[in-house]
Amino acid sequence: MMRLAHILDGLRCSCCGALDVLWLDPVRGIVECHECGEKAAVMVDGLDRVDALDRCGGDW
Image 1 (cartoon, one colour):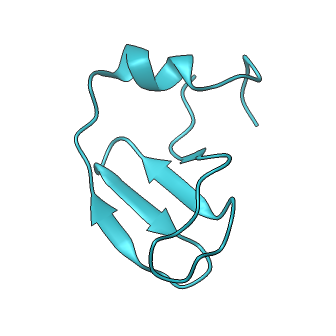
Image 2 (cartoon, one colour; image 1 turned 135 degrees about the vertical axis):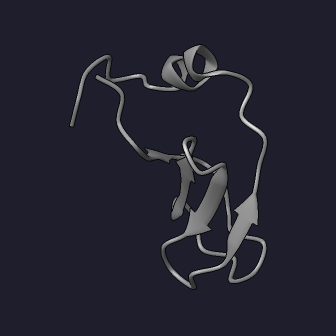
């Protein structure tokens, strides 16, 4: 089962500068900062590619 959102480790928000607070929602095609609420539209290259970002290998 795929999680609905994936944390983007090691990246900073370009608006507030906070580290490790960006979340990718591949279904909606949005990256959101959970610190300041800034959002950006993104293009996701297929669900298999997003699943490859999941290093845990399982559901949370």
